[in-house]
Image (cartoon, rainbow, N blue to C red; front, side, top):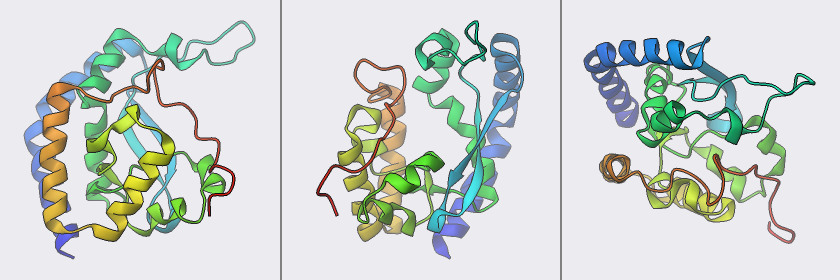
Length: 201
């Protein structure tokens, strides 16, 4: 209950203070990347319950001659990279926090197709509410492997506390300024998770 009250108050105050800033970036996204301004995608939340995450879009909808979307590297513009590097694209998720779908801190909500690919241990990341930032994000973000990321997520599930959340929030602010771990090495975005390694429980 303390975590939920804290999340709600911080998200409400942040949205109120940042609303002019968010409006400016919404206009810039519309001009530079087109419509829609927001990227909405279904993600699994607490106990794998599905919800729609809200972010500023960072990629175009460019397609090849057959109508298929081009690779992420081709659709991610310099403006989109800036939004990701500064984490501005994540700010609309404060609306998800207000609605109770996200927490400020928790394992990041990933793609729905990953649900059937987790090991039993990895799936424990859904035993808490997902967050805008998390223990894995301040300990490598997209620069570490999926296996290491999930170990950090499960560690958070077993050790989360109000004080740990405050520590993660402070570390997140620091990481945003230094812009560490934004991309997986050699990739514009994190490579797709294809499943737990053979022999993993």
